[in-house]
Amino acid sequence: MGVTVYGATNQAGRPRRVDVLVVGAGQAGLSAAYHLGRRGFAPYRERVDGGFVVLDANATPGGAWAHRSPSLRMATVHGFHDLPDAELPAPDPEARAREVVPGYFTAYEARHALPVVRPVAVRTVRAESERPDSRLLVETDHGTWSTRALINATGTWTRPFLPHYPGHFAGRQLHYAGYRGPEEFAGKRVLVVGGGASAIQVLSEVAAVGETTWVTRSEPVYHEGPFTPEYGRAVVAEVEERVRRGLPVRSVVSVTGLGPSVAYHRAQELGALHRRPMFDRLTEHGVAWGDEESAVDAIVWATGFRPEVGHLAPLGLRSPGGGIALTGTRAAADPRVHLVGYGPSASTIGANRAGRSAVNDLVKLLGDPMTGTATTGPTAIEPTATGPTAIEPTATGPTAIEPTATGPTATGPTATGTTAESAPIPVAV
Image (cartoon, rainbow, N blue to C red; front, side, top):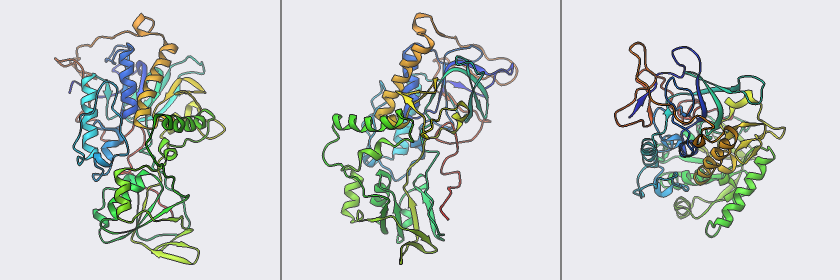
């Protein structure tokens, strides 16, 4: 690739300074980066202040898609929308989503010369001073960055949600984030918990090799008929209203309900969609509803995720309602901060729109770089003769920034937290 990054603090020891910093390089982060470039913000260059940069904790492109189950095929993906100005070539329906989408993201970063620095994990974001127009300091595992504005695109994959139920189960438990396909469950009795698309995927695969029981907290919501633009707008409006009021977010998928997907029809054909209500407690060998106990060998918790926003805590963005109130994508408590891929934009099409909206709003806040009222274009520089150079230009121009051989090895799908694969999943006890 085009350039190599060795750290996040320059040789003088002061934070690197940019106009806009994007946290996360999934669909929402790449969309925001594309629109930043389109509106005239220059890709960051070492030892030249200004421009924009994207920090990503993954060692390679792909966001959360790179961590999905190998059994998830493009035919069973629960919807995918192209990135701006780059149509996804028609894939083989049986191709693995965890290979197709990261490959698409890799090509996108290179095509648009996006300044993605990886792997860099963001720890905290705080204001440089109490002044409302002060810069933001972004502290990472590779030093500190200083930015005039921040677009948070960290998604949810690093925060799998696992509810607590009383009791103790001695068998295998895992969250959907750690699910790697049906093979390990061949001939087993498997309890699948959850009423969303992830649960349907697991049921459609495991029921073909084992015995499944499906439980949900509430009656599953089915959406009959096509997903029309009018229905889509109504769904987004419902989620958006909660976010505007500062309430904990609901995902767009949780509101759309279960549709006639390939996985749904497969699970239906296998007789796996006979839902039972949620159990009362865990037992050593399974679960129980009152006096009735059901023995199982494994439990798959397809119980969703929560937004990865803990690194924003020092900014005090949360409202009394428990969520982060947004006006569009802008944090109501701090106009320097935008959240994309959060709440109503937590879908691939919503992420694209949110990226554009956030950038347009930041142009109003920071000034239009196309007219010279903001940073308009630092130029690349020569590497120094001593010490590691932060960025080395290539003969063909900059492309996505590569990790170094000696850099951190974190592979989280967003710029914060750990992956569900590498971190122990807390289980109900």
